[in-house]
Image (cartoon, rainbow, N blue to C red; front, side, top):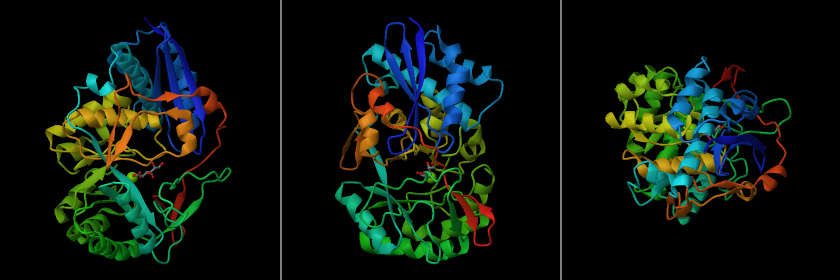
Amino acid sequence: MSIASVDVIVTSPGRNFVTLKVTTSDGIVGWGDATLNGRELSVASYLSDHLASMLIGRDEDRIEDTWQYLYRGAYWRRGPVTMAAIAAVDMALWDIKAKKAGMPLYQLLGGASRDGVRVYAHASGTDFAALSNAITGYRELGFTAVRVQTGVPGLGQIYGVSAAGPGVRYDYEPAKRSGDRPAEEQWDTRQYLTHMPGVFAQIREEFGTDLRLLHDGHHRMTPIEAARFAKDIEPYDLFWLEDATPGEDQAALRLIRQHSTTPLAIGEVFNTVYDYQTLITERLIDYVRSAVTHTGGITAMKKILDFAAIYGIRSGIHGPTDISPVGMAAALHLDLAIHNFGIQEYMPHNEQTLEVFQTSFTFDRGFLHPGDQPGLGVELDEEAASAFEYTKAYLPVNRLLDGTVHDW
Ligand code: CS2
Ligand code: MG
């Protein structure tokens, strides 16, 4: 058997997704997620204009060889567009291999190491009352872990806070369809550093110590600001502080580690193991945050997580709504199989998205399971997908109060 056709499907059921469809000469279909929020068409073109033709006729079973062929054969290394394209091919080939074996993918990755995958939800609110309402809502749904983000007095719309107000729990979508310009948001780290520790104190006061709390700094602090913040929030026993500082400066995490034992998670903007090398070998992080979709797929992600396991570092795979249900399923199969599982991000997709992507993963009292369908367990309905035209959308640009561009 061989790869007979390769198709790229761009659809926008509430937000943009790019999906790769690989079909073998025997008619077996594999799906891969290639969604890169705000730059979707770059990956769609990389796949359709550069990779599709070279995949036709290749043996679909040679996944490792295809991965190396696409990574080394490009000559130009790394980057989110390249690694998202390779990830989509890799996911589709694993989907096909597991379908041919008649097994859910996790069985080919070593079988289940746990009964279910603990997930965390995104609780947010413009103020504490709204945040508390969102946390209560998620606990009622059975979540045992929540990421908490809230507004900062004096600032307008900021990262991570749903603009829809209290009670609407799932709708935070950062990419805005604002014509040809990204929306702009305001930021002031000093106000944030002053405000946030009190929010965690209030949450612990109201919800006790059992609930696992996560928080996303979203790349905005300098190393010393992050060191101070991580120390200030130590009493509130966070499960992790994410992206405390821009992760490209891997050595900066040494400073944070000198000042705090708050667990650190980094990596959602990373796309190869080399982005982690210092962080992992020096144990500067506690969780690997990459998305399977942005990091070269299942083949690459498994290698990164096995490398991290040697250093006592666990998984925290990225799973917001701008990762498609295919990418989410790939994460869940890895989550179920690897030994050093930490936690899985889970922002439920909206109804429109679930019209296009038929999923088989299930949620039960705070845990997800990928299901036991052969393959990844997600199928894309191409007719439903065709009803949702691509609409250009950008992630916001962030500026400090004096107008300086800052990390969003
Ligand atoms: C966030 C992401 O989920 C997270 O941890 O950092 O939602 C991120 O803002 C988006 O993936 C950007 O598209
Ligand atoms: Mg994040």
